[in-house]
Length: 480
Image (cartoon, rainbow, N blue to C red; front, top):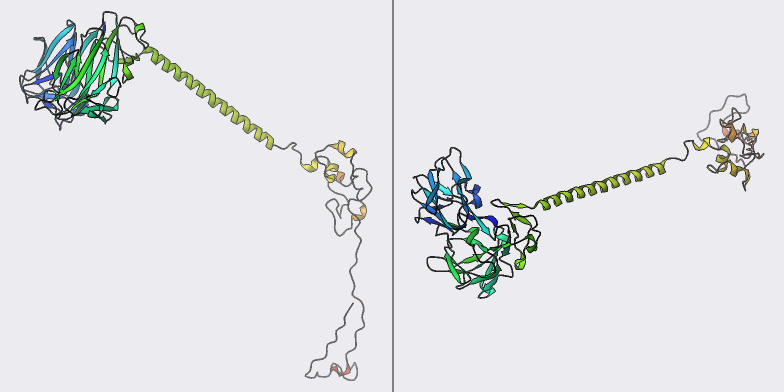
């Protein structure tokens, strides 16, 4: 038999609050509200105020808050008190267990939370234990999102609208205010849960399974102050194995509002062995495999709900994920190592290509080849050259006025003696430069100064005469 927990939030119409007006839905100025499950809770300070839930199962747990100003309470199941306690605490805390009971006979039960003092208490959510199938069976949960084609919207799809919001299951929700609008689903299973929203402007909910109807108050007994999403609107188990017809509709009797909506539907079925599930349900024992938003009721078994525990990922999935991560990491390291080695090899090749062939300077190789422009070809080339090298340099260049790189006008030899000659040639490397003397101007007889120039009188020994006011005439001789 597959066991699992069903969670009922404080805003669910499955919980009835009485007397009217004694409970408050999530005070707006409460600083701890966001820490409650779903961000909501119901609280009362009226002595004798009750919160009642009817369920089919074998156990139940109620959760709420502990605060410094909170008071006492009691929990009774089927008329018998199972626990009495106090929610008073010096340090405020939320999502605390107020009371629990287990081992009840599998069947219908009624649980009641009562404020026994005059101080506040609150309720956050309720979990009750449920079972499907025979002992040893595997439970399968099939989830149908509101967009699933298996769900039929009547009287026509145009009578329903779609709203998108991350707060909805699957991000979408179907709603309608058309009188007589309904949603139909044919399923195979032993239990069914319907999820949607509750709000002050919502109509009461009417659910019919195989012709048997039940009405749930859409506004959680008129005790919600705002729209609450993903709330369990209806739950029914102990259905016979086989196919069932479900009709979800609204009951708009005053003072209820006109709207109804549908977020998702979960169907629970039992399989005699893991082989009956289309998913991998091996080794799940009496757990319940889950799926979400599967088209046309496809059964999957990716997660397991162990008895009385929240859902967890299958061990095989965890092991596979770890191994996959290790393999991916090894491949990544291998690729990085290959790229690093390749880069080093390319860098080494580039550096090698940039190194000189020989550390010797060009003039330290073969001097005779340097003079002939044959450096790097080896001495063998010098023995079979097509063009003979010029003959050795003559000593007549010692006193040249234009000494070459290969001669020294003072020492008669170059610092690199091997470069004075080229092979066995007798021709000088540089042709002989003729010796040039200093050019002398031609001798031209100077014309004597005219007697009337005023420079002299009648003879050379006389005193020069005073020149006239007119300057003497200059005679120029053209030298050719």
